Every structure is written in structure tokens, then in C-alpha cells.
Image (cartoon, rainbow, N blue to C red; front, side):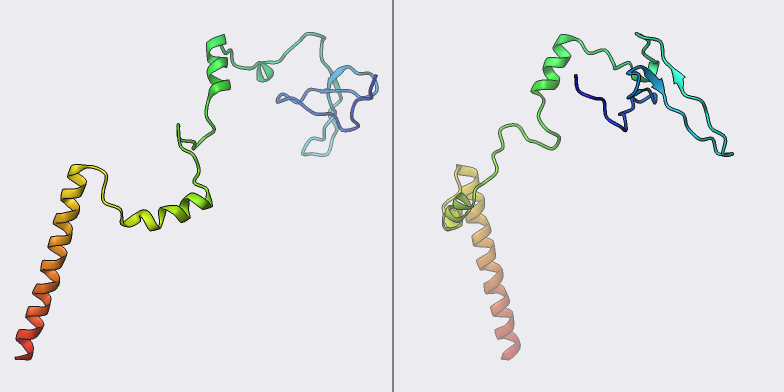
Length: 127
């Protein structure tokens, strides 16, 4: 049988296992005025309210096990450095669907018109 730790782990309610007697106890502590509280023994089988875990049904437990880590997005895979390098040359590829292609054409047309208008205005000022 292994020996219990010298500094026992405490539950939420402060109950620990006494390393000498292996009984559950609330260890002695010091009050703010300097006096010492005695060590309290806990009856075998007693579980205080603070240590009772919340009831979880079998389906809830299964959902917890299958749950994604916080901030994780379903189906998202982190891009590798190779795929990022491959994606850069392909950035000039045409948009995938019809509406996106149409919008890209309109943006390009509008950008060319605005640059021409600016050039005309500068030429007018020079004359």
C-alpha cells in the first residue's frame, strides 16, 4: 500500500485525508485573531453539499465527451504552411461562381473609370 501525500489534497469543502490515520478530516487552521481551530473528523460516507457534483444524465455525459474544445469550429482544419504557399499564386484565379465573377468585373470596371476620371481632371488643371 502506498503512503498518502504529506500535504493532502483538499476537496471544495476543505476535507482532506489525514496521512497518519487515513481518516477524512478538516485540518486545523488559524483564525484571524491567532487562535487555532481544532481538527475535525468527518463521518465515513458523509459528503458535504459543496462536494456533491451536479447530476448529469447519460446523454448529457455523452454530449460532454463528444463536445468540441472552446473556440473550435466544426469542420475547420488549420492550414499548413504548404497550402498557404500554394494559395498565394492561385489568388488571381477567377471567382468560383457567376455572381462573384460579375461583381469582380463591375469592380474592375469601376476602378478603371475612377482612375481615368482622375487623370482627366489632372490634365484639365495642367491646361
